[in-house]
Every structure is written in structure tokens, then in C-alpha cells.
Amino acid sequence: MTAASPLALSRLLHDFPVLAESLRGIERAAATDAPVLLLGESGTGRSTVARALHEASPRAAGPLVEVDPGSIPSTLFESEFFGYRAGAFTGADGASAGRVARAEGGTLVLDHLEELPLPSQPKLLRLVAERRYAPLGGAETGVDVRFIAIGSEDLPRRVARETFRPDLFYRLEVLGFRLPSLRERRADLPRLLDHLLADLGERFGVREPVLAPRARAWMIDYAWPGNLRQLRNTLERGLILAEGPIDPPPPEGGPEEARPRPLLEVEKEQIRHALAYTRGHQGRAADLLGISRKALWEKRKRYGIP
View 1: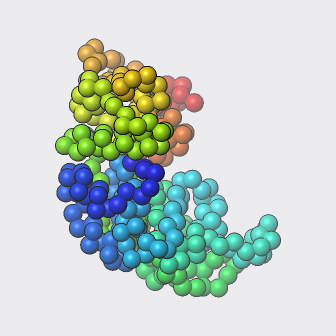
View 2: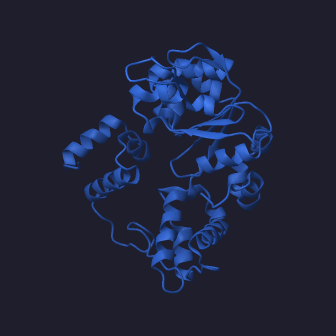
View 3: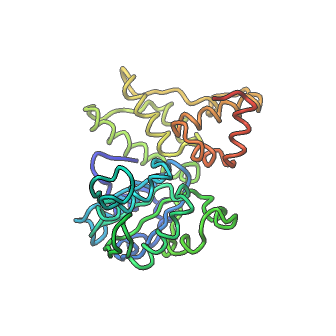
């Protein structure tokens, strides 16, 4: 749910009652410096809520720095996150400020927290607990930042399986909120469609885009496994291709499809869709499908999916 300008937290809570119920107390959380943990399925708008939290906080005038551990090679994570001094390692000809230093006085958002390398978790724990860290090859220093972490719904299960440090999890879960999926937010869908249409119309220079009644009907009934991201992409594609009212067909498996397909065919398609949706990221695709990385790898091998 990314708009041209940040969507205010107060408007999010006013416009979408089901979301507001899930985020009860988040306005009070915004006024504090306590860490916030946002859990939910991929595409539920967790990053939008994180940005709205920052904009509603006393740190709104400070920087908002987002870090996605899954997009940074694990061997480079600490140098990218904590920064480094000249000579810290081969090729470090000069110093580089890391993401932590860039967030000074503002908010540091840790997206896809479950992707954080295990060796880096103790250092992040100390940073969250004491607001102190050491750049690679440098002396320890303090930092003034607020932490917002974004994680998958299975993060507590990862803690139980000891693939994520429990002490770090509980440090970040001082104020925890769960964002519901779209299938849990059917009451929000009519207003959400109007909001997304207005936002896309502004982006593409289309004045008051109109959604065809039959498209609105199936969109409200559809489960949206890809959540807000899938809904927005569907509307955007429909807007670009429309010659009149926006009237995209329902996705395969939508309410207009009557004949069930073989499970094997559905599974292969969903694996391909998840990999395309996450741009080939194995860990996120596995999370989206609700299976382990090993299970996803075995299924890809079995079905010959590259």
C-alpha cells in the first residue's frame, strides 16, 4: 500500500477498521522510543505501517533508514549495517558509515527480520539493548535510534526451533502488532479499493479511475494470497490496459473458476508463482508457501523447477 506521499497513521486507522482493531494501541506506541515488532504475511502492508509509525513519532524530522538482511550477502551484512573504518579488511581503503550511523536521530527499520544472519544477531541485540555498537575496525560508539522490526508470522516458531535468538526477539517485541491478511480484512476491502484506485490514478495521471462493478465484486470475494501487493499489482495492470472502466479478470483459482485442478498442477504453479513473486529468493518464497527452505528445494528438484 505505497502511496505517492506517506499515508498518515491516523488515516490508516480511521479508514480501515479491521486493521485498526489489529493495531490497537499503535498510536501510543508511535509516541514512545520503545522497539516495535510488526508481524504478518508478506504483502500485508507492514512497511507502510512502519513508515507511518515513523511519521507519527517525535523522530519524524529525522532519517528513516530501512535495512533488508535478505538483500545483503551474509558476508557483507555487518560492514553494510555497522559500517567500517579504513583498513578494517582487504579493500577497505576508506571509512564507510553503516546503516546504523545513517539512522542517527531517526528510525531504523529492520525488514525481513527472520533473514538476519545468526552470527550478527548478538551484535544487534547489544545495539538494541544498549544503543552501542562498533564499526568494523573502529572503536565502540553510542547511537540514538528507534527500532522498528518487520518479520514473518512464523518468527515465534523460528525462536522455538532455535533458528532465531529468543533474547533478541523479546527485546524487539516490547510493542508487538500483527497485521491481518486481506482474507481477514474483507470489511476493509471496499474502502481499500477506492484508496488504491485514487493513488494509482494520481500516479498515472488518470482522473477518477472507475472500477467495473463485476471486477469490484470478484475482488471483494477473492482471498488475495499475495495480500495488498497482489491487489495493487492487479489494479495497476488493469488501469494500464483499460480503455474504459478497469475490468481485470480474476486470477486463476478466483471465484469465477469452477473446475478444480489437480493438486500437483496447483502446487507446481504456486511454487513458480512464489519464486517469481520473491524474484527468486528461496527463503521468502518458502515463507510465502508455508514450508521450509529444504522442502521447497526438494519440491523444485522433484518438479524440475529451476
